[in-house]
Image 1 (cartoon, rainbow, N blue to C red):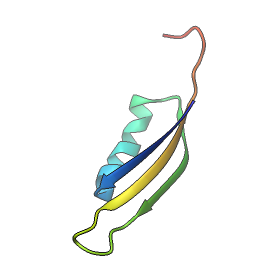
Image 2 (tube, rainbow, N blue to C red; image 1 turned 45 degrees about the vertical axis):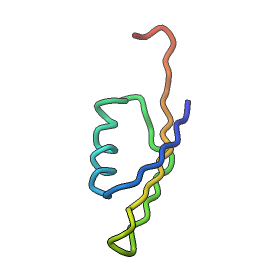
Image 3 (cartoon, rainbow, N blue to C red; image 1 turned 90 degrees about the horizontal axis):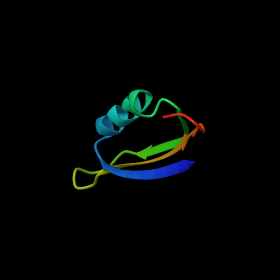
Length: 60
């Protein structure tokens, strides 16, 4: 199963999300991650991440 998420905010928050994946979704694998840094103070940094989560039958 693959999820694609989009974020808007500050890059350190994106990094914290990615670091937490190992704990929250240990069977996940990042397939693609892109981010764009804002050019002006009035804009937001943006990021897009595609995460593949492996599902194992019979586990809880």
